[in-house]
Image 1 (cartoon, helix red, strand yellow):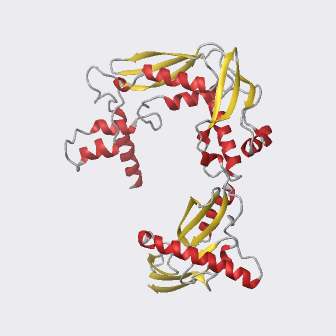
Image 2 (cartoon, helix red, strand yellow; image 1 turned 120 degrees about the vertical axis):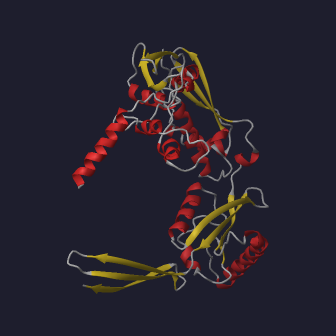
Image 3 (spheres, rainbow, N blue to C red; image 1 turned 60 degrees about the horizontal axis):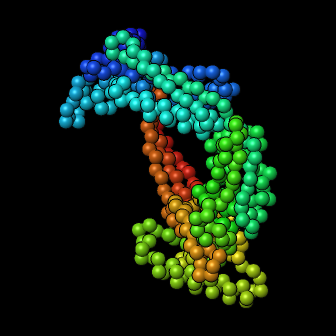
Length: 413
């Protein structure tokens, strides 16, 4: 029986493979079978990487193939236009399983030329030239060959950091040696983007909360034959908020946040936060010790405060740090008790201060799961099994997960 099924499958695929791939190509058009990239002149050492980048940017892509056969196109050709129908074999073949033919008329070779030239320029070939030629195959197929003449590849001569004096300039210059823009390195736009991200990470780690990579400007002087000079600057239009360091003021955790009641709870949370702040200060004074540098708004006392001390790394009066922000979110998520964790930062009344609010939506404290399975064995035994699993995600209010499993098994012959 299995042998017959195998023969049927082979026969079906043979029938599909025998179908014409150009059956549904309109008159006067051709099936686009793909592109080929050639280099005119000296080939670069990283030709493979450049070819991959160029091929990924060409549009459109030809019909997908499996083992060299465009099965989806063949399935499409087996069907007929279903019109407005949303059921039936033709609908499945044309709209679900199949893939319409990619036509030569859909390709814009001139536009692809410009895209490839821009890619080569982004990788150091400032005088690159790309030409194309359409190759006709038979009466209904065509492919396109793109020929790239790269010219001279530019490398970096010097990098200048033109940052105004101040804290920001000092922080950037202290880590200048770690710059990704190196002398004699090939000019690549991706390296410039990565350098902007590096500067962003440095500043975000030192309190510049509103700074983004878009505020870093790298100007390129390519007037020297085969060499470029780079000038790294902070954009003159950068807003004052992005140029200011921020310290944390209030860090507040709301342990019972609900998306459904978000609007109604906004005012009450602000009131609770203010009360919690005053209570924390009074408690610190009475006990003569420093309380953790954050506030917990937990009206129902669901959690012990100590369980959050190992998770919150943003502390009152400390400098904002991106790493502390990220690890706080990660630790709160990894507690395994909260379904959603959302952080929100707002500028405080005092210039240079931030208020952070973390809204935590807890899972149900207790859960019960029942699984019923049936089975049969070759020894004529049949039976069923009932698995019962009970879980407590916040045992003793300490965020300790506790699980109990039991099973009931029944067998019959």
